[in-house]
Image 1 (spheres, rainbow, N blue to C red):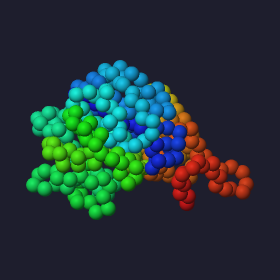
Image 2: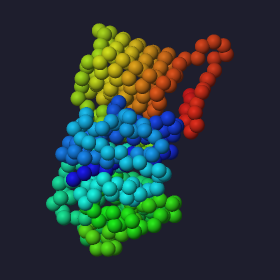
Image 3: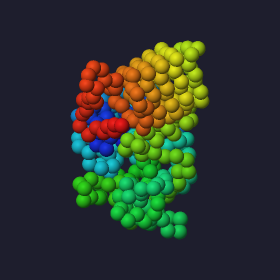
Length: 354
């Protein structure tokens, strides 16, 4: 069993954060999303992992390395231009060969790992095994039609979904999937859809099994999804205080304070994580907040937010909530007269003021 992880694409729905970084490297609870996918594969006993990357960038290989830190070997597979998930699978044929494999979208997260899906796939004798999750907006995903306990059709992003299930971003295949991805043609949006490959397998009489994800699963394709994934991961952390918390501060709930961080005259209510080298002074860090390394928060309040590394949040009179800040962002109190809001904001940013 091998693993194939998709980490290409441009992350347009997460701009402006993805103007300067691959979306799969955005941190959730201060750890890049892609790490969770590799960790899940390694925990399932997989030692050979292929990661499909944008051919014009070495960002993912530089960040992930050769896989030795997880006890695996990573092979990088370049993708010249985004062309759909079936194209991603087709690119990996030389790496997969005739082995069975799990295909994992690198921006998806699921609690409890993937070993149980692999075990069910092996027992099922299926050629293709899909994971399904009930969602409020199935029209955003591939949607299965299920009759008498069998998947009889799969449609990509339908305007009228035939079920409330989405095909989640975790798929298991044998080598017949390569026949399917070579046989299909681009969709109306110009991509080789993975749903069309699944439909091909169904039409040709191959066995397509499925299981429902009963815990939480998250496609982190939009900002609100990132915040929700961050909440879900933080909800399962174990407290660890390696930094310094002074006597005037209060820490409550599940909180990680990493080495070199200082909490001074502040309140931290978990679940939350404070990264290495941070300074939290005269401030409040509320539940479901991730504060990236070397960030300074002074006389400010933050809750339910993702703050990346090297930020400065100083003397802010209102609470930051439901926010995502990229690296090296500064939000500071205005000085001088007249007192004004002053912004330096990149493309596709969003700011709400009160």
